[in-house]
Image (cartoon, rainbow, N blue to C red):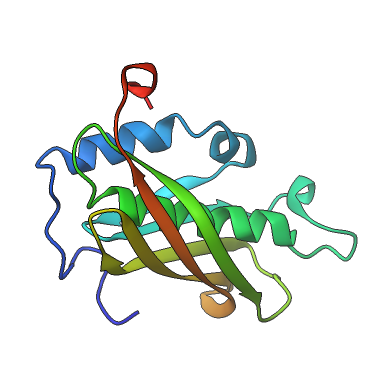
Length: 158
């Protein structure tokens, strides 16, 4: 991912995209539960981070693969959401994740970047890095497809 998180080649369809994304992230109960934070946000881009805690590890002390996948999925979702129209919401319909190295670090950052933003489907490329001692190492890569769910009266607050 070659662009800084503050630059994007995409233009959001909703002028209020940033508030909508930040409000949506604040409603992410799982991210709150694991200590996830919105680290960076730009049109078509999102980074989500979590600090290592013993409760998030598997038996060898690595960050659990499920947490890694959840970070990547969340970053992908908000990267896509930033380009969706007002009143809509993203829903992941498919992802493929490669866990490329043991998740050893002090902090983990998933950075999603939209590859293609269609009217209905958005494709997002996400990388997860482990940070420790000022160094960063790529540990996972995800490709996700998200669908734009239109608002209906029963889902207006999603």
